[in-house]
Amino acid sequence: MLEVRDLSVKYGNFTALHGVNLTVNPGEIVVLLGANGAGKSTLFRTLSGLQRPAGGSATWNGTPLTGGKPEFNVSHGVAQCPEGRLLFPQLSVQKNLRLGAYVHRRDPAGTEQALEHVYSLFPALVQKKHDPAGSLSGGQQQMVAIGRALMARPQLLLLDEPSLGLAPLVVEQVFQVLQQINQEGVSVLLAEQNAFAALGIAHRGYVMESGQITLQGTQNELMNDDRVRSAYLGV
Ligand code: ATP
Image (cartoon, rainbow, N blue to C red):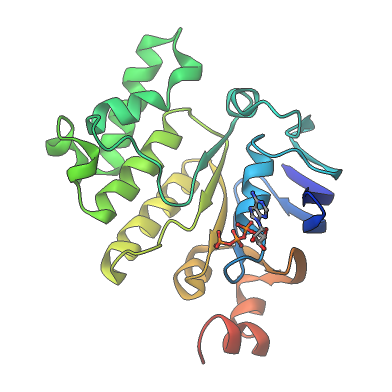
């Protein structure tokens, strides 16, 4: 499981995360709701090993994720699909996907298997595999970004705002695939501003405000919470 305990992150004098506590149990989809600037991306960067915390701990199945070596975290089962996708637009879809498998570069058969699995999850990418990633629609680029993270064959997938800028129908498609990935045994931590779609597939969730967890609950509890309804569901 993912265990985040009292995690604090600072940028100079500015404290972006104040003692965050959060867990993701094996097999769960957990959503992290929060407005722009709440600290979601900071948490994800820290869990990916890209940002060192000022205090506290984050472990995956007991292994510390805070050593500052992203490739260590990936090779221990934690892969991130970052906000804004960060694809290489000139490289083909297939080359972008293969980049996600670099930690398994000594296992070519496993890499080919992972590639076939990504294409089975996102059949729309098959006919685009030789096209530059930058020529794809926003939704298809998001599929490539998720696929690239899956190429590392993670046990825990960190997804930062996968619905950003996508049409509602495409969001639905992407979230259906997330559910399928989860049913195949991958735990998911999902940062989202699209609370409606995210709560639709999540087992549990947390609300983050100004670098602190201010609310947590099951899917049902959050969907029926007045604060969540007015701040994130617009009802
Ligand atoms: P968004 O959805 O806009 O990415 P977020 O919830 O992911 O928002 P963060 O990007 O984690 O929020 O930012 C949290 C706070 O930390 C914000 O106030 C932001 O301005 C600040 N911050 C983020 N990165 C840095 C940085 N490199 N240096 C200084 N402050 C930063």
